[in-house]
Amino acid sequence: MCAIHHLLYLRNVYPSELFEQARMYDAIAVRVCRHGDVLQYIGGLLDRLGVYLDRGVLERVVLVITTENGTPLERFIFDIGCLWATQLHPRRVPVEHLEASLRAFMARIASMDTFLPPPMSKGKAVSFIIYFFICIIQIQHLRSWLTSRTTRR
Image (tube, rainbow, N blue to C red; front, side):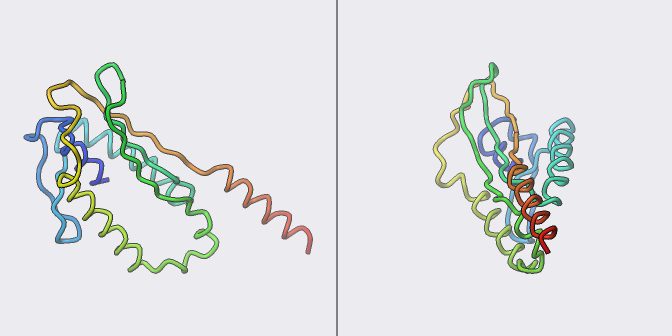
């Protein structure tokens, strides 16, 4: 989730001294926070998201920059899309296409500072929340459809 780290940097959630430059795909420069608590929080999130991603049910990840009292200042929505259909036909999306899509996505994130307005958090104490959506209803519908299709034969 280098995208989340880079957005935390761009939106001044933490001092810039806490971030170091990293490279993705050997070309895209991003900033990654090196503070242990932030790394642990985002790493734990990735572990939980990985389970849903592997199952193909991760739909959306949302990063919300908030004031100290929790009032939202900005929202960044990563619309992953419901991948449940690709679970039926995993070979339909070649790895090269997936990598190209991720590379393009990270290139856009890395260049966001050129088109985003100045951070609303400037001079304020801020925090962030990350939450995600999964598409359980569609998976349950798919399972019931598959069950009904197999029992009718």
